[in-house]
Length: 307
Image: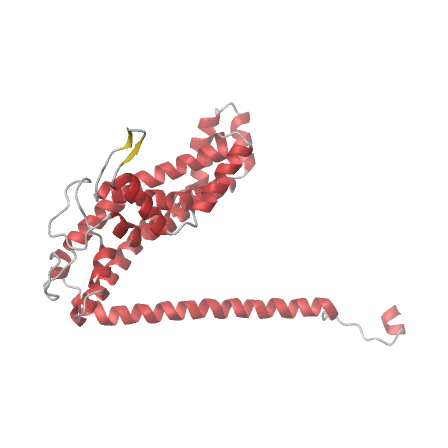
């Protein structure tokens, strides 16, 4: 006979005391987090349906191919769409290779010392800097040029697509580098050790084994960074991006506008028809961002399956 039976206390598997309180707290926290998630989803769905209801009828081919106008029914997104594609293309070309290369150097090649740790700390801090600060930096360095003791460190670009792309590249670099570093760390050390043991050089190991294994995680960071840059307005307004452009961009050295800036301009106008245009522009912008994200997801899944 057990000691519990001899003492007259029934035997049970149900938790009691401190363990029971922890289990109740765990169940409660699960429901609290689930409720918070559902609340956020509900708000987003409500806003989405409100925007779609308001702007859906305005989505026509003429709206996508017409230039901005003072007449709301004749205004369109042509110049802002072209400017947006030019800007995002330049940002992706500059930011993604630079971020991945920086992450590889920091994690695989840089020596482990106090200077490297200081660089890591500063990159983490820069990821939280407001976008308007990057706009001020872009205005001071890229738009107006930067001279030091009479020596031109960076030439004056003016409010051009290239200046905007450089500003957004600086803005999204920290978060992309952080995500890339974490993805590289997730690659099992045994893969690196096995490659080096078989006679591969450090660069061959990084290029053929570490980088392919880290690409899925890197692309997740790229998705978040590009989505932030795609909807950026404050930094571009700060460097002098125009709200009214009535020509097609053909080079990186031209003045420009983007879809978010055009949407912002329409929301400041008093006519209700311009607010309908803004809602339609929001739908177009969301479609563009989702399209970019889908391309990144396809690349990520392709590397994940091959890995």
